[in-house]
Image 1 (cartoon, helix red, strand yellow):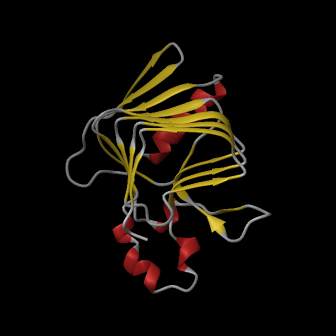
Image 2: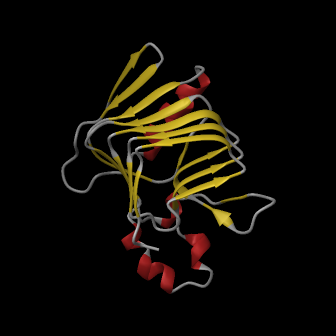
Length: 180
């Protein structure tokens, strides 16, 4: 993996792997954390398929999906740590989540693929399955959220959840979700 930093912009460039792609959430999360700790910037996901578990978007970070980038949620249940809000029902998990964050964005011409069809059979065999399937995007207790240009496809549960969020701007976001 090659890492390029241009000013406040963090770019990730992956070499394609032969066969089944490995999960990349640990590397992407490290770049999100590093970028937020530096005061913010852009974490750019290049074209190609990138299989991930839950990503936690932090304050000041824009997650940018370049044209042709597919951020694909894994079907591995253990890759989605649940978090519980004290004033809401149930546990939440998602491909991309943000809690107590501000000045955050998900942008670009790429796609977030929830891989929801892999969760359908799993969901019908468990009690209370609604809380056990990851949402596409979850924003809780956030301020200044911008969503722009990307596609969200086949989330395993609700596509986008906003809970106690102040200041949302959404432009040219395509949501196509037939899995729930």
